[in-house]
Image 1 (cartoon, rainbow, N blue to C red):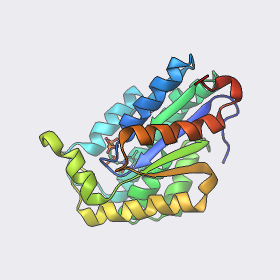
Image 2 (cartoon, protein in one colour):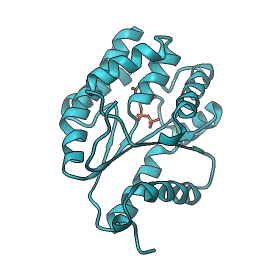
Image 3 (tube, helix red, strand yellow):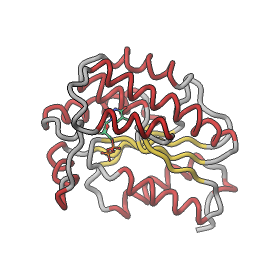
Image 4 (tube, rainbow, N blue to C red):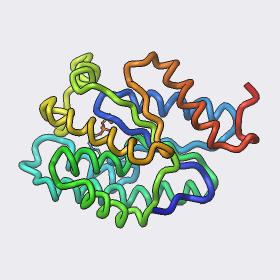
Length: 218
Ligand code: TYD
């Protein structure tokens, strides 16, 4: 798979309720305070068509969605996202932080829905023309903990979130397997660590990828 030459592409992955968006926001804030150009985005979504696909696949009430249809909708959303948003931003030298990317499909549709990791990976490499992140931050969350974090304050669960804990356990194992296969491209952190500690560890790894000119003086 190709990685981009310009810019820096970082994906945040993990189970539901892992705190990915909080950490992506913290990292973006720090990098922007150094004058770096950061784009924060998310999947499914990130483009007008992607947001429509997001509600199709996540909202309840569209009837039964079989596993292959679900995988194709996520992949279609990702194709638009990679082509229209991520690649152009990287070509302009921006740092792109995405909340979820291909690994989410490999874990949720490949493992969780039983479509197989290889088939789902192949589909998504085709969809994105092989655009891969240089770093994936995996926030590892225990399924029960993730559920209580995301339902705090009575937030309603979407179609994927409302799956049983067993489904989420398979997803967790699949994410960890991906990280184990390519440790150089992953930073795995237990999601239960304090927010500041997580942010510090993520920044340290990102700094090691940025040239010395882009690192803060602090
Ligand atoms: P999201 O709303 O981003 O949830 P969270 O805030 O927990 O990250 O993600 C939507 C749901 O869609 C989430 O349960 C994971 C699932 N999903 C897949 O099943 N496959 C995919 O390829 C992606 C991107 C998300």
